[in-house]
Each structure stands twice: as C-alpha cells, then as structure tokens.
Image 1: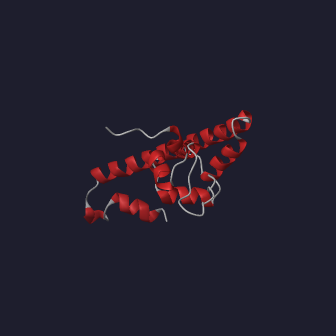
Image 2: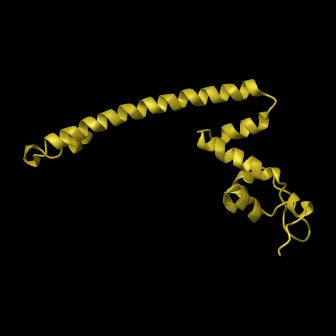
Image 3: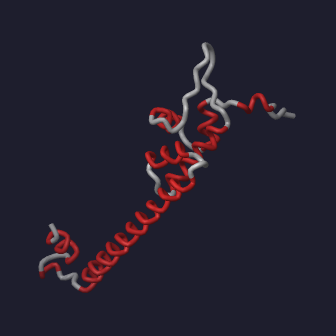
Length: 142
C-alpha cells in the first residue's frame, strides 16, 4: 500500500508540481514571475526551487480573474491591494463590468449587421447582378 506524503512533503512544491496543481504550464509560472505576479523562490545550492502551497491559490486567482476579463495589469493591482482595500477592488470591478457591457452592445450590433448581410445573401445570390451582396457590402465599407 502506497503511503501518503506527510505534511512536510506537501509544504513546498517544485515548479512542475505547482504548475500541475494550478492547471497551468511551467512557462506560465515563469512568465508570472517575470512580470511580478508571483514571487520566484530562491534556488538552493543543490536541488530545485520550492514553491509555497499558497502559490497554487494565487495562480488560480490570476486565471479566474483573467476569465472574468481582467488584464494581467489589473490583476497585479488587485493582488497588490489585497483583501484590505475592497473599495478600490470594487471600483476596478465596476469599471470592468461597464466595459463588458459596452463590448456586449457592440457585439450585438455586429451580429445584427452580419445577420442583415446574410439575409441579403440568401435573397440575392445572383452573381450576374454584381456578385455576393456580403462581399459588396464589405468592399464598399472600406
């Protein structure tokens, strides 16, 4: 029967294990280190750098914040602010919320225009009258 690692073995993880636990690549961890989102542990004279377990939680926070639309710069600012400055984090989230709303409105307009063009294509497939209406519309908008 295989023995579970003791608490001391789970305290610090190699970069590969940290990446695996956080669901990212080793290169992602190295990139986050270069831009200051996570700290790079000191390398012992012999052996590998060991990452504290909270690094996994920090990386998961970064990835989740990215999924919500925050840039890495925004995420760095949130991490710098920490839990103690909820009003500033709320301000950042409110701004992101408004930006996402504007993007959704823009995408809905684009969807409507494309839908109209597709309908024109379905009704007017007579290439003899000047080709595809969708292509004519795109070329004419330049």
